[in-house]
Image 1 (cartoon, helix red, strand yellow):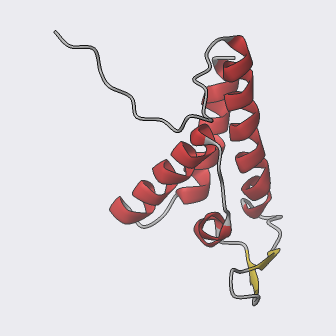
Image 2 (spheres, rainbow, N blue to C red; image 1 turned 45 degrees about the horizontal axis):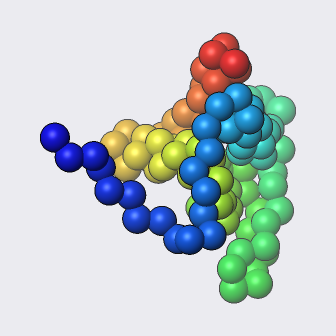
Amino acid sequence: MHAPVLVLKDSLKRESGTKVHHANIQASKAVADIIRTTLGPRSMLKMLLDASGGIVVTNDGNAILRELDIAHPAAKSMIELSRTQDEEVGDGTTSVIVLGKILVNTHA
């Protein structure tokens, strides 16, 4: 048996423990808080500035998530889950993020 080989930049450090756990929880909460207000009868529109400098006004969670430029690995994973939901079902992207936040909070 060979140990897995990890190829990382010299400037990157691998971290673990409660500090990382709390950072993952905060990242999931941040993504969910961005789009949770787009759900329900009192949903609000979001005004976004896209990459080309144009303005996008929408309450579509998938459109909002497409415009986000996220660097945190846990937040990226949540967005990938949402994209997969959109590709497979065509709906429920916002719900996936909000439910993900609920699950993270119950395991915190």
